[in-house]
Image 1 (cartoon, one colour):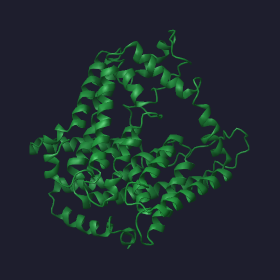
Image 2 (cartoon, helix red, strand yellow):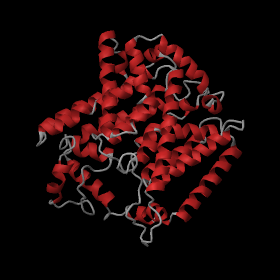
Image 3 (spheres, helix red, strand yellow):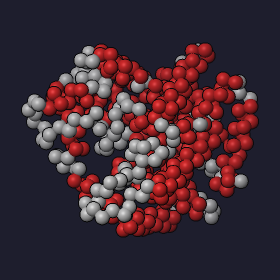
Image 4 (cartoon, one colour):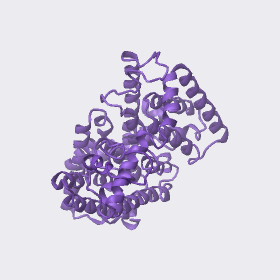
Length: 436
């Protein structure tokens, strides 16, 4: 019943659910297990980082085993994946030449599990459109579950009211269900496709069902705002703006959506002044040369300039930043030495040098290019039409990131990238004919 209510001519969940059940029955036990295991991903990602990492790693390993058994390696020739291999090799070499070779090499070596997962989804698990739509529904379910978990957190552990005039309350960010301030990453990275499609359907479909998608879009956006994660909310907000224009938009609907979104955000800010402080005064304050944000970037830039060819090794920033900071440098400000430089591109420069930066940046560019150029490969599909927004926002250069070689950030990002890449080809034969 629910599937029928949210189905549209362009995205028929009910039909795809029925078709997928039939297709699963025809699969052998190995593929049947792997597909069902993949469907559980959005729920596994709600648990914790280690189960989520194990889930992604198992899919990557199973994909390698399958490729070896079937001797099917042609899919590995895609440009974006070859660039990922290049970055992987540079990371290993850089790790071996670091001052902590065992630690750094291992950090670089295991990173490949994330591109492997994305490739597995693109050319194997997510190849069929009905199956992708069922996975999209699981992502939608995960999004709604996360939002209601955050509603419960606000009820049982309210961060408001707060009388501190600076807005810095004892608790000013949401952390359920992880115990860490990252639920916004789940909403705005792992399941970003859900929000993009909800917005695209809101401004495009002519039936009254658009009201349901409209309410869901507003609800999930407000919950992202309430998490207090600024960059994730900004990425989600601008993803919604782009989504308004990529799938048969109705101009009056766009205007209505914008007016209500801005109105809803203004009401939230009025009632939650602490968030107003966090998203305005505090945010602007972090954009100067003496802030922690620039300080983290400065530390990475200094490391890269000190050792530009090969860098200091994957995940070595935390170990070398303090020592490097003692040296005088022409960069303005002072270094903030955290666990990493908080920017993927600066971290690649610091830890793998110019070669790692070139391979990594090129890999990201080709992922975006593939999604953008093939966004209409599945006609009249809002998921495919909005797929290019995912790599654009997940890898947008001027933002704060987690560690490039870390767990949580990579899990959320590559989960989303895998799903985005799976939407750019109609079938297996077309993928074989069109690697680029």
